[in-house]
Structure formats: C-alpha cells, structure tokens
Length: 486
Ligand code: GLN
Image 1: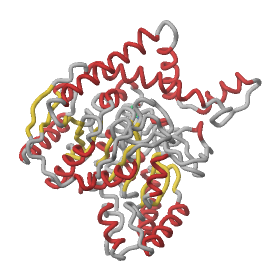
Image 2: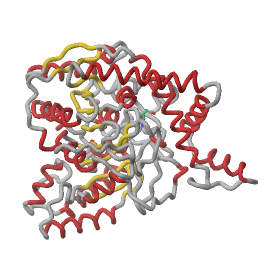
Image 3: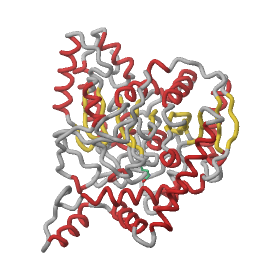
Image 4: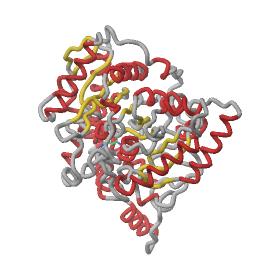
C-alpha cells in the first residue's frame, strides 16, 4: 500500500487522476501524521482539520465532474504570516491572538482557486523576525532531523512540516532568508521569488521592500508547481509586477550545458562550516560534470549587506508594527488612559526581539540619525544591487551555501543576537537586491543534519533557477532522503 505522506505533488496528482486514491484519503493520511508527529515537532500553530476535510471532499467531487485544476486535492499548509479568512492568523505573536482576518491573502486565494486543501497554520518567529523559530510568541518548532536542533527561521514551521511529511507543500515568507535558510536546515527545496513576482497582499508586513512569499516542497519540481499557481500580478499589490508568469513546471527538462555559474568568493569565506563548504563545492562539481562552467566572482559590497539590511528592515518594521496599538489592531490591554493603554498593549503583546527592532528602527528614522543611518543604508543597498546587476551580465546564476552552518541546537545562539544575525549573512543580499534564490539539499554534515545550496538569479529568472535545481535533483538523491520519524 502506498505511503500517502511520502508522495510528491506530481505523484499524488497522478494517483488522484487515475482514481487510485481520493483527496480525502490523502488529507486523512496527512492529518493522521500531524496527530502522530506534531506533538514532538510542533510545526503547526493551528490544525484546521474540518476545513481540510471539507476542502478534500469538494476536490473529490470536482474531480469526478472533470475538474483538472493544478493542485486539486493537494494538502498544503501556510506560514501564519499569511491572512486566512475566518481562520486565526497570529503571525507568531501574542499581539494577534484571536485575530480572524476577513479576507484571504492573494497567494492563499490562488492556492484555494487551484484546488489545494489547507491543513493548518504554521509556526514562525514573531512577525518573521528571527532565524530559528525560537522567537515564536507561542513555542519553538523542532528540526525533524534532530529534535534538539532548530528548524531554522523565520519559516521554521513551513520547513519542518515538509521535512516531516506533514504536508506536500507549504508557503513561507522571506525578508532576509526566511525561506531559504529553514529549507536548508531541514533538507527540503524552496524558492524566494524575485521582489514583485508574488503578491504581498495579505502577507502581514515585516519589511515591505523585502518581503516575498514562496513555496517549500520535497522536490524542485513540486516547488515549480506551487510557484506557478501563486506568482503573477495582483491589482491589490502595486509592487507586484505585471510581467507574465512562465509555465514553470514545463521549463524543467532543459539540460544545463553551457550554463555559466559564478561562485562569490565572499560567500565561501572564513567562518563557513567545513562540511558545508565541501558539500556545496561538490554540488558545483556535479553541475560542471553536466556541462556547466563555474568560476569565482566577487561581490564587492558584500560587507555592507548585514548592516544595510538590519537598518532598513528595522526601520520598515517599526513603521509596519505601529498599527498594533490595541485600537486599530492587536489584543488590547486596557490602561488608565489612552497612552497607558497603548503602552500596556504593546508591552504585553510583543516579545523581546520585536521590541528591540521597533526601538532600533524608530531610532534610525528619527531626525538627526536618518541621514547617518537610514540614508547610508539605502546607498549601500543600491551599490549591492549594482554588484548583482554587473555579475548577472556575465554569469547566469550564482551558487553559494545558504547558511554558514547547519542547524544549531536550541538555545545555542538565542542569547547572542549578533550570532543569530550572522546566520543570515549569505541570504540577505538577495532581498536587498530584489533577486530570486532557490535552496536545494546537497548533502549532510557529520552529525547527519542537512546542508543546502543556494542558487541565485537575476530578477524574474525563477525559471532558470528551477531548471538548474531540477537538473541537479535528476542527478542526485539528497532531496529524496528523509528523517526517520517512524
Ligand atoms: N533572520 C532575518 C531577520 O530576522 C530574516 C528573517 C526573514 O527573512 N523574515 O530579519
């Protein structure tokens, strides 16, 4: 009997089409697995079992009537940063406990329109601020490969759910690495689309000029299937681009002969865990065997990316989070007067990391400091963007590790905010520049924890990243390995 939770989306769709399994059976298998494993992994903040069963039944009826929508009956789950109509959406924060949006995020609506079945909402660092999911306002999520380790973050629920086979695909969001880094820590495939490729309408804002939603799945092919559904212009998000969406799943076959790969020297620098470097270099050698040409390149302003990102992201966060005052949004704590009520609401609703960022963000935006910090960071951002523009005139993709290390242990980095920030050093430039990045498994460290490689491309070249990732997965089997969870 087929193990229904080990299927890819492609396989599940084929079985449903042939009538060998129903969407309801597929959904029940995932709900049962969540019930069995999630008490230890804790990827889900909320399992919407009845909603999922209703969706699955509707999918089965639709299929019986000849419906062939691209994700019909496919069980997925969503990072809790995405607004879901009538379903609690907390963004990992106590501030939003009990918030039931009156609308669906555009990406959610598109998944529903494509026939996907929604299993529940996934844990995350509060307001997507963090790299380990330890900043969740509720509880941390464990890495399915080793429960004493973090799953990465901020989309740790999204990566853990796929790695533990509790959903066929999930959505996360990436402001500075939060899709790619957890994918790498959990050994799954995922893409951060170019800024403007996917609508941000209904994605609760952290850093609005960086945020993008994107899919996690067990194969690059499945990632392509989900991206094809969620991508594209949305009149409700003026920063979403009107450019047409390529047929991503159809673009995966091409070979990669003649592909020009750049290896940024700054991303293979000191401080990299040696087995991470080895695995990524071995992956590049594999691609070279398949006909690609790799050479070293330089990202001149790489040193500025961390400070520029954290100044701009915190500035944007401080503005975006001003709305949680207990009057417009947020769980109000009443005080003696309005000001007291604001203070109590924000004091009780936000965690330490969120407060730290709001304070730093308002500081860098205040008169007298704006030019010294915020203005300079914007200048650095432009220089970084130009570095990438120049490189992509010479090479087709850049390849690098996703993170300097594999998944760390709970508590190991939490008390050192600077070390936590360094976990993002290889991913944030892509968000500063608005380019796209794919994360794909390429090995394991000595302790058996997954290693990921990052394939970066010029804005709106997702098709090429997916093609390279799929070619790599046809030649290797890292992505097919899964943790032994019983
Ligand atoms: N770790 C980074 C931060 O805390 C990135 C988070 C993200 O991409 N949402 O800002």
